[in-house]
Length: 143
Image (cartoon, rainbow, N blue to C red):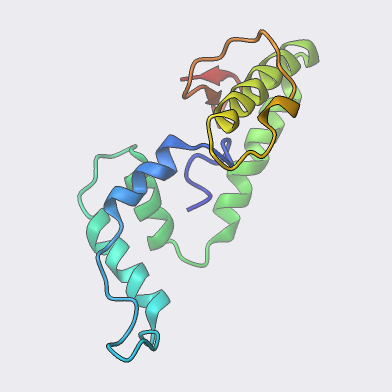
């Protein structure tokens, strides 16, 4: 799941959208005990609900990740390629973009009811549209 939209570890619209495709399964027996093989049942339910999703969509990416179970190297290669692209950017440009993304994440966090003291978070005048993130291939901002 984390390999879907890997450049946004939090506040990922793509990963949150996968919840709409979560399988409807019974988590416990009538006695309240957990269902045996629950992890495999959840996995199989996702495989079924993700079938036929549009190519290139987060759901199709998640389905491919599930189909390639045990192939961690693919995810490591994608992360390495992203970091290499970030390192290749002029530092000033990369940092300006990184500050925009962090500012956006702070603004989104302020809207959550879990913040005890939202006023203690730094405030800036950077403007990044919701949904802005780093492109995993180019390390440039996209929406």
